Image (cartoon, rainbow, N blue to C red):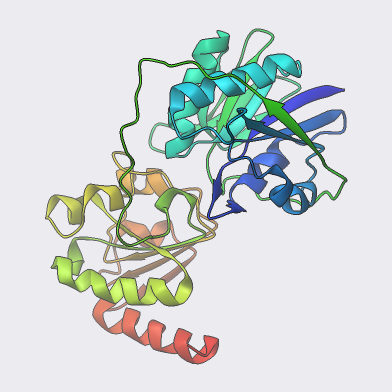
Length: 318
């Protein structure tokens, strides 16, 4: 039986939902799944992780408790755990944290790494990635006895596979590295991370003004969605770069993507192609987005979005 490691991300004392798709990607008939958690609360995640097929929860900590966030220290601790449990394959999210950790782990092990995978075959040591602005999918072969995969959030649907999980404490000794974290500054207002959101509503140049994004934000609050923007909206100064979806922005894969006033350029489509359902609102019936969406509305977003928000409030009782 092959042991597969999974890097688990948590927030506010809960496992991020996007981890469950990674667990499903790691699952296999002859796979024993080891989930690595770094905050010392492994027992708190036992019920949710075993629901999706995790067999062992490795609770990594020091004799002083959980390890404060430091990508060098965390990567070293995970490498120690992988070697201790004889694990040669690791999967994690291609998130901000994953992009910090997975390359460091791969470098420490001398293992090949593929990020932003939309599919993996662990037995064949292959990964599927979207290439050339989403025009083709490439199958990448990893050579060697070890392999590291970063999975695109929401790209693989989670499938429950209930089992009994065992929590295993794993103490490590961390060493002072070259990277020192002097402090972590968080945004004053917590928002849904674009790359992990299940629902996204985005605006383009047709938003006309930064203040008009409040129309989308009101709808997003009802949906529990994140708000995104096209490059043209960002370039025009209507939205910050961290909201940009597309080839030069963030790649997303939500269940629902609503594009408002977005023409649908190849560059934008490359960043949201793997969305489950795409809805477009645009006054131009010839806009390219209508060739790529599942549902299209030819109309003024300043009329359609408030109308949609009103209907949502009535249906959801908000």
